[in-house]
Amino acid sequence: MPWTNRRILMTLIGMILIFTVLIASRYEFSRSNEYLPAVLLKPNGEPVSLPIKENQLW
Image (cartoon, rainbow, N blue to C red; front, side, top):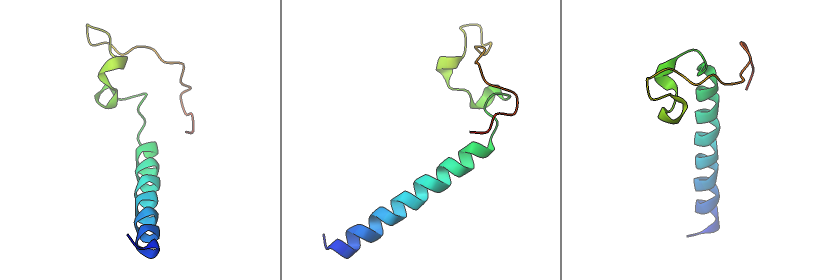
């Protein structure tokens, strides 16, 4: 693969990763149980209390 194509490809991948992080940081994962991974849920479905402040900036 030519050097210029690799550079363009890596730039696009980097931009996609940055936008993904920015979009994901807009959601408040601590308030909604829908977005919590299954690991953070107890067997009865209650969320595990995490040491996250109310309005913590990521």
